[in-house]
Image (cartoon, rainbow, N blue to C red; front, side, top):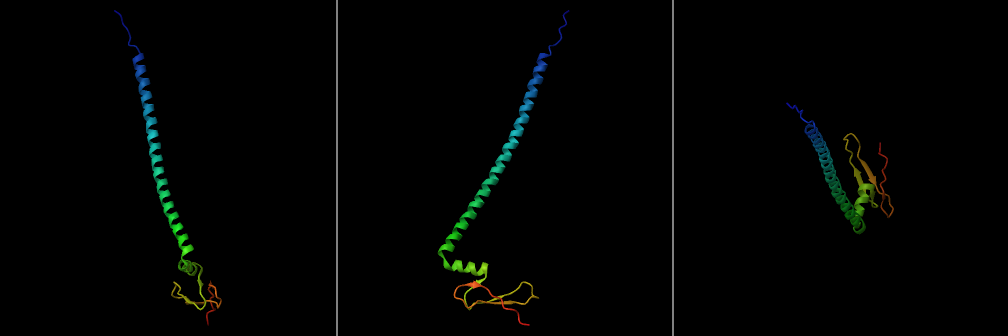
Length: 122
């Protein structure tokens, strides 16, 4: 009676192949997550590029308006720098109802100048 024991080679081979397949699967999963994150980052960056280009286009249009349209330049000077023409009268109404409104009178110079605020009368 010959008693041959089963060879361990097929089991060992199956274990090695199974381990390799498991490692390949884990590597593929990790690569898929990395690829997915990279695609999301790319989409975010493309959206930022679109927004930046739109802002840039708006700034170019604004620069062109400031260069070619004196009314736009004057409006900007009046709104942002509180400049006024001679003999302009500006009344600034405060947001707080308890405060007294301020009357600003332009100086008598020819060019637009910053507003002069007179002292409130007592």
